[in-house]
Amino acid sequence: MVQNLIGKVEDVTARHAYGRVTSIQGHLVEVTGPLFEMSVGSMLSIHAQGREPAQCEVVGFSDDRALCLPFSELDGIRLGCRAVLHGPAVIRPTRGWLGRMVNAFGEPIDGKGPLPRGYRSVPLKRKPPQAHMRMRVGGPMDLGVRSLNAFATLCEGQRMGIFAGSGVGKSVLMSMLARNASSEVNVIGLIGERGREVQEFVQDDLGEEGLRRSVVVVATSDEMALMRRQAAYLTMALAEYFREDGKQVLCMMDSVTRFAQAQREIGLAAGEPPTSKGYTPTVFAELPKLLERAGPGEKNEGAVTGLFTVLVEGDNHNEPVADAVRGILDGHIVMERAIAERGRYPAINILKSVSRTLPKAADPAYWPAVLQARQHMATYSDMEELIRLGAYKQGSDPNVDLAIALHEPLEAFLSQRKEEATGLTEGYQLLASILGMQSEQGNSGL
Image (tube, rainbow, N blue to C red):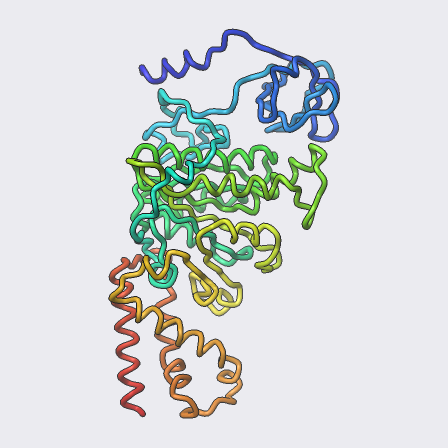
């Protein structure tokens, strides 16, 4: 109660500055008034009779007018409406937010009542920790998914991208990680998701166990571009809050591509020139600012381990957003439609996936087994067409023969049901046993 009271007192401002709406073009609202009080990123509320105030953000200036974009529809807004200037967007989270679903403003949308308010204001937009003050990444994090644990080991404080087309299984993989990862807190941002899938993800995929230690931020695809972008900022702000509370946080965002598309809409509305595939320059300026906020904190803090999905258009993994994100993050996990079509889930292409903390992150006792398994998978991939056509003759090459013998057991190792969990050490031991057993059979056959 004391924290709530402190928060309400701090929200009271001594005076209000306001302007007037002078033009509305599409979703772009022009406001005239005390421009010296406004800056890019300032929040406004436009008041019109017969409707709730429309929240807007200043995205630019033209002559003596501020250019604003709304967070909601503008029905009922007309010329001359009063636009009241507010302070920057902040939230006051607490540990009581765990197990809740919120929108881009940090307001509850799960029907479980109001959220507790903390005594400390957390801004939605912040700079990442200074590079020379940051701690290094920690030890390996047990993700519960054996293919990732073994071949794309993720460390505490590392940032990885999940690159996939639509309908390949990104959301299911995220739910497996949220339930089974060894993190203390999960912050999940659903950016531009289909509204129908939100409840399915929370109830069926995430489940009560996963939700209990998670905060889910939701901005569906039908919401305005500012809402989708702000949901991404809120996701990172909540992850930073729990990091400063000393927690090991797993921050998952689905997807960075929709954040970039929202920023593109905002930039085009503000008059920016389109560049690569219509994306504006601010898209590629905002991506590192967002993604660099994840990672280790400063001394005596926790860490934010980041998993960011990238929706590749037309399964093109070299499109502009995917290329930019891949250069910022500490590794990438590639999911392929061809693997999903033959029924192996999660549909991860191990040979194209990279964790930049390897080999240091791997258990030294099992690293030779990991390398050996990758080599066998690469050998089979090189000869796959010949093997399927029957053009390869058994016994022509011992390495190929062994790769063929290992193919089915390794595919079974990479396949994992949604409700199944495999620990880090258990996965290593299973992989080593597969290689040892098949190698002995191959040698005896020769």
